[in-house]
Image 1 (cartoon, one colour):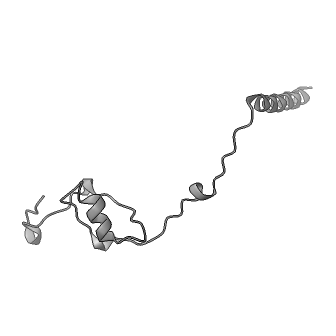
Image 2 (tube, rainbow, N blue to C red; image 1 turned 135 degrees about the vertical axis):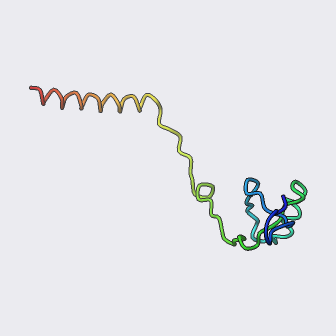
Image 3 (cartoon, rainbow, N blue to C red; image 1 turned 60 degrees about the vertical axis):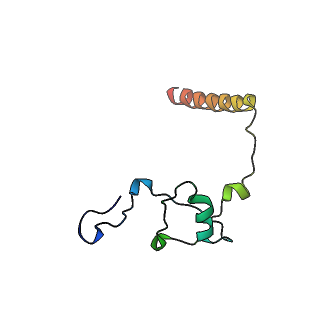
Length: 96
């Protein structure tokens, strides 16, 4: 889309609804990644270097999460029954 007024007249304008972000591997250059991964799919795409950020992402779940299977249903039911019985006993103690 081209600008229609003032100093932007005739110059390409970004469409904010098409804006996207990419996570570029740290060992790779932004330009080479952009040329290989983005341009084949969106040939009119461009990089706004003012918004380019360099940082790290540490996916804690991927590196530190250890799956623990849930307890057996019978054990959970037994715990619930025990708690319910305790609550009923406390209520009975209040009304006596």
